[in-house]
Image 1 (cartoon, rainbow, N blue to C red):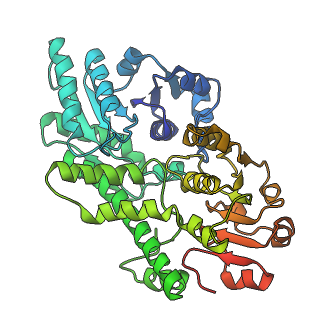
Image 2: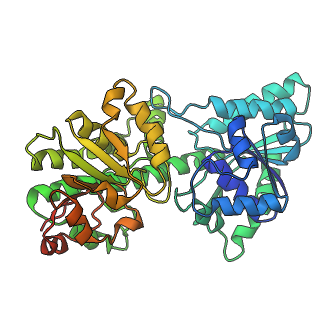
Image 3: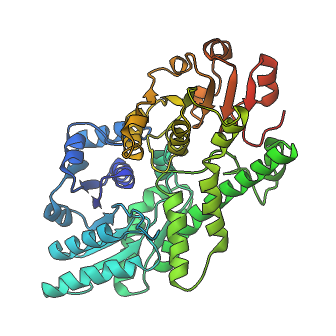
Amino acid sequence: MKVTIIGSGYVGLVTGACLAEQGNNVFCLDLDPKKIEILNSGGVPIYEPGLKEMIERNRAAGRLQFSTDIAASVAHGDIQFIAVGTPPDEDGSADLQYVVAAARNIGRHATSPKVIVDKSTVPVGTADKVQAAIIEELEKRKLPLDLCSVVSNPEFLKEGAAVEDFMRPDRIVIGTENTPAGLRAKEQMRKLYAPFNRNHERTYYMDVKSAELTKYAANAMLATRISFMNELANLADLVGADIEHVRQGIGSDSRIGFGFLYPGTGYGGSCFPKDVSALSKTAKEHGRELKILDAVEAVNELQKYTLVHKIDQRFENDLKGMKFALWGLAFKPNTDDMREAPSRVIIQELVKRGAEVVAYDPVAMPEAQHALALDFKSSPEALKKVSMSADPMAALDDADALVIVTEWKAFHTPDFDQVMQKLKRPIIFDGRNLYEPASMQELGIEYHGIGRHN
């Protein structure tokens, strides 16, 4: 099938590459010429395991192309995926200007029937706005108003495992309207996703608004579990309990399960913070407060300061002139995404207290440098107290303590003898509970986890 992907960012690239892998002829559009230049020269502007190899394979086979040509992109695909960004607006709502602009471009250039697929994460009612924008452009050209049909097909990709998630999905959600055009669009989507349903049916068909709400509801539920566990971990610290034992005790209940029950330094990234805020904003627009989600947001913001509070307490609120090694910058492992990363808050707070930070991350250091430059824009002198190390062990040299923020596999079993030798004092603040407190005690390492009790 001929497919166009509008927006060659994280969702667009993964969607385009995976659909090309299934034999479709995919045209990826982006209005950023630098991004398209990178892609056409064999590079990939984001880090995602397996994506670069898949793009190379399908470009070589002629199934995947990248361009800035809007008219060519509309002409190419019978199915047009809108996968552009929906950044949070100042009031927390999703900014739909790029989605609507993409819809208008389709309406301006379409000459044959098109299925328009909202792949971007968008609030309930966006499909109506997309349809209205397309119809407005079709009217100007005196073309049939049912030439284009809008479908909601939200993505459920985990950064760091996106290719695997797309190729072996838990579920595929497709929202269509019960109209002749909507039924035709449903059949097109059924054909497109048929290869992913060979073992068993994974597709859930529903109305458009339900599909739009499903995406936000899924992310809000996962964010809620994270904030819930962080609240319990903080309580465990106060009462002397071990949150790991609690996690095992409640996760073994089949009604609860273990997923997203790991306490830490708070969630970040491009999805959870934005989507929880946007869903809460949508509710307020309809006269309803989602009090649980407002609490989830508040807990998460506070949780980003948890390690800093532990460090303050340990060193009696005097960090001036101290040096901290920090392992992990990305908001989660297997990505270079620094959006809303807890490391950014932790670094800013340590520097604000007069400390120096030497950081290491396997892939996110270039992105981290850009992010931190923005964070310290008003105080560039302070940024000089932050440096990047090419090696995790080198970051420890003469540091007063090690701070772990991201649970990269490379951090799970380090050479602790070397860690102790390099640190000025054998102290670890573990924001991801990678190590057992008793094991650390046996090694002579002072260990501070999240809700862990020796």
